[in-house]
Image 1 (cartoon, rainbow, N blue to C red):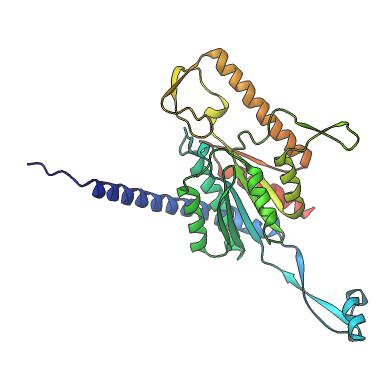
Image 2 (image 1 turned 180 degrees about the horizontal axis):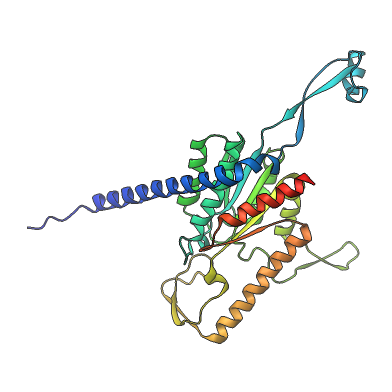
Length: 331
C-alpha cells in the first residue's frame, strides 16, 4: 500500500529546500564579489569614496601659537576667555544601498534574473565598504519603502543585507525610486555614498504636468524623481545603477504569447497578446524614448550612472567606474 505524505511535511520540505538554495546563492555571491573587491576594487575604494574630511571634537582654552582662525567666538564670549575648536579626521563612511525590490526584478532571460544581479551589485559595494571598516545600510523600496536595515559594519551584517535583497517578497506593486531617495533624506545620516539600484521602469513619466505660477502663468512642475535626485545629490555621493534584461530592450516578434503579470499590468489569470512585428516596433520605440528621458535627466543633473545588463560581464563596468573616479580624484 502506498502511504500518502502529509501536506505539512511537503511544505516543510519545500521550505527547507528553498532555504538551502538561498544559503548557497548567498555564499556564491559572497565568493564572487569578495574576489572582485580583493583583486580590483579594494585598493581604489578609499581614494574614490571619502568622508567629509574633519569633524568637530571639542573646545579648549586658547594657548599661544594656536591658529586664531580656530577660535570659537561663541564660547569665548560666554566664558570671557579665548577658546579654540579642535577637530578630528573623519574616516568612517556610510554606504547606503537604495535597492529596487519590486516584482519586475524577477524577470531574467540570461544567467540569472535582475534580482540576482542587483544582489551582486549591492554585495560588491557592501564588501568594499566593510573592507575599509565603513558601515552599510539598506533601503528597499517598491512604490514605497518596505525594508530598512540601519547602517552597520561587519561580514555577518553584509550577508544579512544580501539575504534581504534576495528573499524579500514585495508587498506593493510598482516602482518608485523617489520613495527610497526621500526616505534617505529623512534619515539622520550625514554625508554618505548612496547607491541607487533599479531598472527605473516608468521612473520618469512621459507627460509633462503643469501648474500655475504666482502670476497665473503656466510653469512646468518638477517631477518627484528629479526633485528627490536633486536633494540627494546635494547631501550625498549619489550613484544610480540601471539594471536591465535584454528582452526588455529588444522584445522579439513571437506572435501569440501568454503573459505573466510581474508588476503593474494587473491582468489577472491567463492573458495572451499578439507580439506581431508592428506591435514589437512600437514597444521598442517606447522603451528607447523612456531610456533617453532617463539619460537626459542624468546629464542634466551631472550624475554619472552605470548601465548593467543580465547576461553581460557585470564586473567590468564596476571596475571601469572605480578607475574613472580614481583618475578624476588625482587631478
